Length: 142
Image 1 (tube, helix red, strand yellow):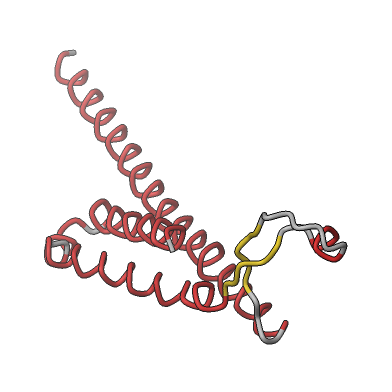
Image 2 (image 1 turned 180 degrees about the vertical axis):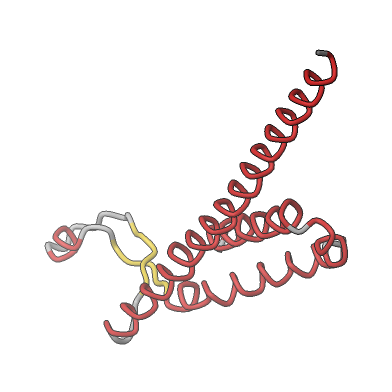
């Protein structure tokens, strides 16, 4: 659950930064404390629901099958998921890959690329403005 919360918190931060930098006037309307609380609650609830199958399907299993088959008690166990069907397990793992890796990576890449583009364009505009002012100033001094 903590991985999902961490990933989607980073995504929420990147979206908030995108709006704050690229659309500052629009962001003032919805970036409020109550909106932040709602976002946090949604992230936690969705993360808990997303990880619920792992909590429900996990079982404590012995670590070494070979020693267990030889009737030698090892005393070591691990918590592993016990899926009723391999297709369900595959589908769930693909869902996790998409929701925790692919989609967040796409959103983070898009937001930070757009932020970088806007900031770079602002730097170019500022340099152009400074060069124009320098040219105007030199023309008046001559």
